[in-house]
Every structure is written in structure tokens, then in C-alpha cells.
Amino acid sequence: MKLSTQQLKTYSIGLCLVPLLGIVFDILTNNLGANAMQALHIRLGDWALRFLCITLLISPLQSMTKWRGMADFRQLFGLFSFFYAFLHVLAYLLLDFQGQWSLIYIDILESSYLWFGLITFVILLLLAISSPNAAKKRLGVKWKKLHRFIYLAAATAVLHFLWQLKGNMAEPLFYMLIIGLLLLFRVVNYYKNRKFSKLMLPIGRKKVIDE
Image 1 (cartoon, helix red, strand yellow):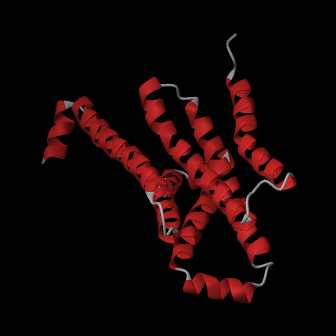
Image 2 (image 1 turned 90 degrees about the horizontal axis):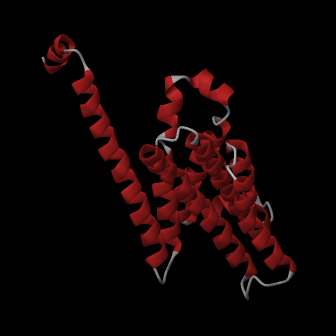
Image 3 (image 1 turned 90 degrees about the vertical axis):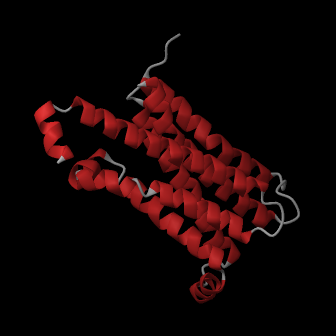
């Protein structure tokens, strides 16, 4: 049975919600462990970072498969990365500090790792707001430049994760390696396409560029 793109998107949305359902189930069954608040933060933050990595993975997959429809899935996974990051921030604001802004302000000033988390969240927020096609048309060429900041968001997300840890660094270093490889692929692909574009130019035009 061959699935349409819309059916694939519907199934993908269902799969993207599975981690949230697992977290809700563990909350209802009191299965988050001794430090439930910390476990909730970690799991929501982990899924935000995982969906960010999946979003970055779409471009290499699109290059290899030549399936243009993958752009819709890049947008979908990017929005779910923002969704889990939003819940991660919401848990910090409303559960950890119960909306006491003066204490939140002091905590952000004193905790360096929170600065990287804040930068990540602001970038993801901007990318989510500018995701609709109407925003894409309105921004024009600026849209692509803005959405390249997703690599900065990935880097600051890993630093946010890495900086707060005091023990095993294996997991954040694993994400750092994945993001590094995905960024390397994009850089190589960029220079490869640039070289190919020059080769495709008429000889006269090529001379002008070379000069």
C-alpha cells in the first residue's frame, strides 16, 4: 500500500506525540522517579534536542533521495522541536519557580547554562513563527537566512545541555558529534553546488566571474 504525503504527515504527527504521551503516562502513574521535576525537565529538553537533530537530518536525506516533499517534514519536525522546548521552558517557569519572575531573573543571571537555553528558545520561537507559507513569502530571501540560524540553535542547545551536567558527558557529546557531522555535510554540499553552478555558466559569463 502506497501512502500519500498527507497520510505520512498524519502518521508522523502521531509518532511525534508519542514521547509526550509517555511523559503524561509516567506523571499519572507517579513513575518519574525520586526527582520528578528534574526528570520532567530532562525528558522534555531531550526531545526538543532530538527533534532538532531530526530536522537537521532532513536536508541530507533530501539531497540523497531527491524527494522535494521532505521539506514539509523538515517544517513538521522543527515545529515539534519548538513544541517540546516550549513545554521544557513552561515547566521551568511554572513548576520550578511558580511564575515568580524576580527569582527567575536572578536564576538566569547566576546560571550561565540558562543563557544558552534562552538563545536556543528565542531562535526556535522565531523559526516557528516564520514557518507558515505566508511568512515565507513575506520574508522572501531573508527567510532562508533566518532559518540557517537553526544550526546556531542546535549548537547552543548542546552547550545548554553540556554546561549543566556534572557527571557523564557522553550524551551531550554524542549530540554534538551528530550536529557537527550534519553541519559538515551542509558545508560540503554548499561548496559542491557552488562549483557545479560555476561549471554550468556560459563560458563568457565564467570569464567575468573569474576576473
